Length: 111
Length: 182
Image 1 (cartoon, one colour):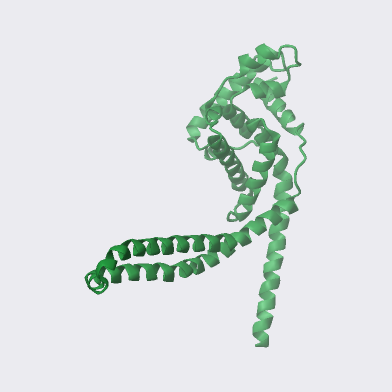
Image 2 (image 1 turned 60 degrees about the vertical axis):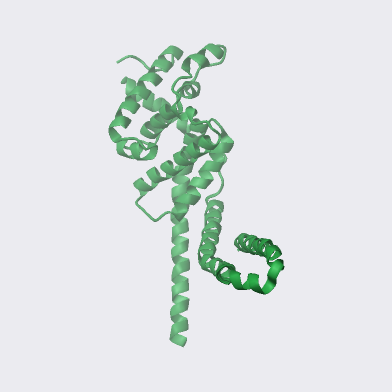
């Protein structure tokens, strides 16, 4: 008998002897449909998540631009207190950015 | 307005009908292929729990893939499964397992008191050798399909299959199982 055919028959027999406990096709189909719907939901909600964060980011950027462009005037108006103002403003901007990031992350998790 | 509502109902009914047909087709395909795919994954991973997880994940990814003819679909399924297994090994830092070729001597020296059978001989081969032999002999896929699954060139598959066969034959002869010289 040909060597290759014997090996082929042995391998086939080994495969045929394998009898595992398999999940039902219906279960796999159902899981796939749930995942499909989740992905579709994420795809639809992605623009909403972006739009939620955009006003906050735009506000922070606008504030920074105003501060930088008008810093001389603010300094003039506040006098010595301007030295305290700069670090306070940095903390405020950093806190706004962090809270925006956390808000977006929370929105993404809940969607 | 009524006509619009009717069209919507027909479209929904059509979508449901198409989904039922798709599900029936999938179930038939699953029943034809799952046992052998599980065997393939068991042989490669040497871990039934891993085989179970990767089997389910592979079919789920296949369901979300675009529809195709049966033969490429089966090859595509095996490619997904093989890639998932490789990714898992990469995360577990077991990449060497894929490239490793020889456990034959180790197995025969360690287990000479156990009955030697085809299962043990197959286990003695390297992961890539097991994959190639399974795909070529059990699934009877073409060299081109095997190359697409294992991400190697078709010409390399021919050499890999030849070497894996020779090694398997050598191990079988040492074990005194069935295979005779030509």
